[in-house]
Length: 461
Image (cartoon, rainbow, N blue to C red; front, side, top):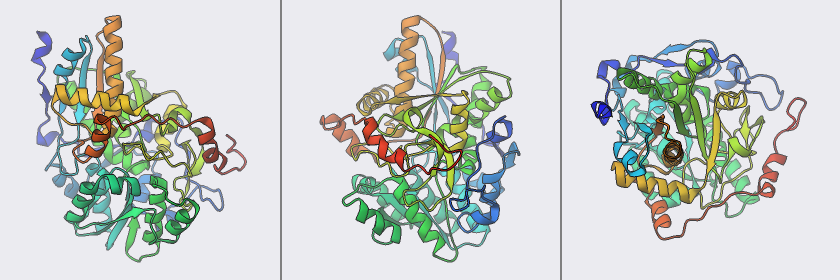
């Protein structure tokens, strides 16, 4: 009965919303490798990035030493419309599993975008408006980032051009329409509206697209139109900085009840949710104050961490973006069209890649049908229809809870529920109708992507 004193939902007060973002890099002994100019192979300077990104965001991207960054008041005010988000105890799921484990999740679905992506979209749109720009361009996979950015751009009065991965554009028409409702122009990628899109279509006829393709198109449009800059919803250092509000709130809420998680689990595509959730906990681990087991969960069909190479690679298929040192499947890698989630990026955040390489976290790859089995069980017990991306974390959390059932250990598990799955019903339909399969790329499937990773001294794989 002692556990029942802890509420199902732990809320913070409005005044407890973080006033600063936390930068994990400040506490990392080994910093993430710098972005390289693909032409000179030298670390990129701020002046080389400002034609692509907003000036203030470039400063945040390159800052490895400032631990805390003030959140502008305008962003704080908008945060108050949907933050703080609750930390919830999964009592019903625990009971259904018969586990002694205590399962908590940080729920980021309480906004119209349906996900955590709004945390960074607001920041990036704010800095674009502050710089006096006309608008921004971006890519989106499952659509959460495009939706969040369209909301943020509408709020700050900016034009928004979104290149949406073609398979998602076709599978998720309602997500597309939400973006258009907020004023965004949405184009399926690869498209014939850009030079790079036409090249990709010529080389890969009938391709269903990838985030790497969409990034290339969005960057091209941003650099060829005055008054526009490119913004990205994951992977970049600046994005993980903004998303640290997730972990900062989660830690403060758990601290209220003297709850310390043993295991922290997040889904991993590019790293925005995982990096945001683990930020303050990883800070304690890096400083030697506490230890946590931190687990990244990725799809077996796009296994950057578990089967990728730790090397410098292009972030985009068109190979026009800077080189980033990350766990990568190769910029030419395109996930199976049957892959149902938004975790479609071929690489991973440089921050998380370095932390994984240095042994501060681990990674597991899970198969798609088992992910949807977990999603269905969670929906039936906890009453929330989870996004496919979040369901990867649910799968791993359930697996850890079942291990506790076998051993009798009373571990405390925290995972990130990045958002809701109401625009993902085609995937749920395929699962229920038995049309969903588990595609796992073979070593031969991965080899072409690896072969295209740039080769230069110090970048051997």
